[in-house]
Length: 117
Image (cartoon, rainbow, N blue to C red):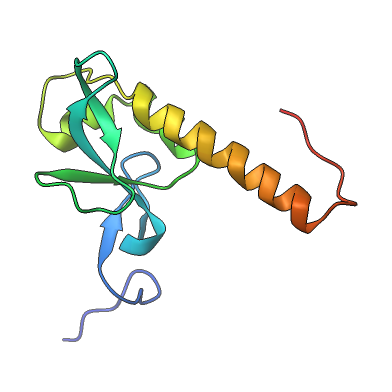
């Protein structure tokens, strides 16, 4: 008996977002690893090039998925480290990335009305 795919075929490696728990192509997700924050304390840190050694977790690069992962305390569990692992460096990275994207969009579309949140 042939197995029926539950979702459309994704090209390349597939990972699950620790925030929304949806599967996506690896290239669409941000890799996160256990590392240190600016003060040297253990924290979840972004690994955009996905080259850091060790265990990694994957997250859609959106504040929605980040907020879900924080609320679910998914970083520590996914990285198999202490429960309640702080993830502020990941949030800072996403905020910076969002700001840069907004600036890019305004340059490409000068007539667009900026949205506020």
